[in-house]
Picture 1 (cartoon, protein in one colour):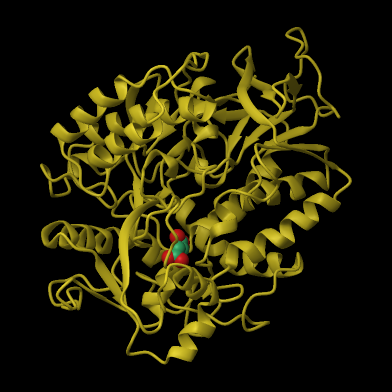
Picture 2 (cartoon, rainbow, N blue to C red):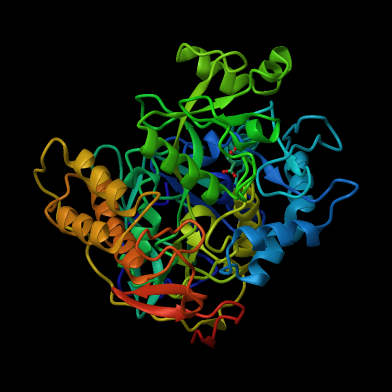
Length: 530
Ligand code: SIN
């Protein structure tokens, strides 16, 4: 193993003899590691087993404009429309343009998409054409991760450290030089690297209702913030409209593809309430559908259901085998029963502010995948664009980690900080955090609820463990950012400011607790990295 004590006198700054350190092992982390490893040694650190995390759970697939009547321009139009005025055009365009190559690259790595070559294309909400490829109907993440983890394990140039938690990104003279880690037995160690790539996923575990696995505790975002990196779009939490309303954590997802295949939504009285007559239909952008379901559930006091009973039962079960099995485990027949659903935290458009090469504001520190905020998704991610963005950013960041570091984005850099001190905490600590976040920064928000949630989470110090400390730090920023954006836009809906305000038609960055504007459509300012 390449572990060693950190050497504060070491140059260690982008020196080509150092490995690239990749933290996290979903689609972004694995693809980045594989791309870098063809030219440089990689050390890959993952806090549980290789290939855990959110990618594994992805049911919905990968959007790619490969249909005969489709185009990258049409995909881009849908992406930008969903993003509610906050998409970074260049980032969104790069993501959409990468769709066909992403599918081809994954096929080369052994991923078997449904329908073969060319793959079959499904329809999902807010897409103007069928353009989603899947694996085994509703198990895309599992199919992708099986291929990627096999390739990572087989690669001689990737040193894999599983069960290893990153406690800090080390910084020397303002440059990221490596990471400090702690293994399962509590042993601490440090590693230097020519670059640090964070690919650690989102923050779903901040909320009691989430489709994200237990790993989604925002570790990379908190680590980057403590190393002084700027964050962005921290108010932009996407709530998926249709998680199965059962008593479990995470909540099982009922993919948007189910509505794409014809499922309709009914309220507790059986009324189909999203038929498009008042501008919102079952296939409207996900923020609109989630809010309509949330409101109807609140008003009627009973869950909304998905109804597939008018569809061919055998076809439904064959097309969605994983979701059918989940329903069966919960005593439901996907094709014949009304399926109770609830909105749940699903994806974070916010995260570490990066450019389209994965560069954060701290030289040497990269972020890719859900822990990064490139602006590609704007205020509301279009379905099945996230694995695609993770794959693209893995390619671009991999290339950049190996280039000489001559210039770097000139966004604000904050002071490097220690993590919050841990201590004995109330046994219901997580419940209290989740309840405060859901009532303050859930599907509907208001200034007063946000302030109340901030007051409640301020009482949760000390946190019991490192993941809790990361969640607490990020929860504070999410609440602050949601109060700062004094309007409604995309996934961020403020009951007390229900309309969009042109004065907020820009992204918002955060550094050391201070907001700064990120005008949409301008390139990151560049400074010398020397
Ligand atoms: C889904 O299958 O509904 C989720 C897909 C996604 O989040 O992109």
